Image (cartoon, rainbow, N blue to C red; front, side, top):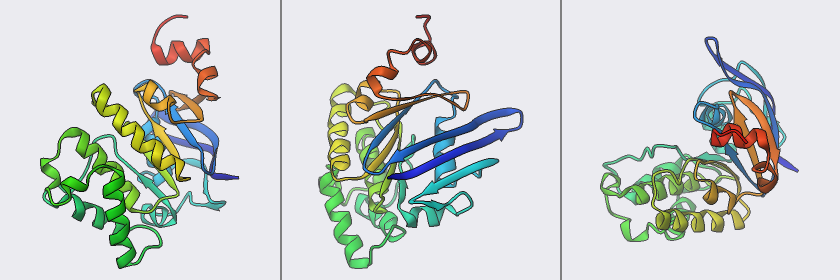
Length: 239
């Protein structure tokens, strides 16, 4: 059963079409990777799914409910969580306070359960030792982990990750991927935009390629990356 279904989703900014009748399904419990060159419309797609921007046409179904016109808050409450490409914590709040803020506006948790959930997430994401540190003092890796942790604190069933491995060293990337794998193994459905291809393909079961707002290909990651068209678009080389 699909947890998310996108049907002919469209969005333009003036004459620039950034989503051109995008359609795809994401089965519950699976992980979908999204790749494409800069400007392909990847982050715009996330903003359409979360309601940060409105579509010009098409429909978005989450858990079989049409959420196309639903507010971002209600989408979060329904079980959609996301991280941002550039971490956006409350710098003056502690790591734990950042999680509590996210958890307070999350799904199906009372105050006591929110606190317990945030403690578990601190352990799971490797942030427990920084619990009382202001977020503004964290390293890049720790800020990425906090971005992931804040998304998890909303108690999502669908987790959207936007280039969370970008800018990290190989070792930092590997440790973050291990955390994402652990989250996915618990049954959380993931859609992950990423340029660090080896990190992405170590987690996802399917790969979707976007170019100029259009879905170019979707399927098995290994098969997708063998495609002449995909390699020319994504790698920027003639094959």
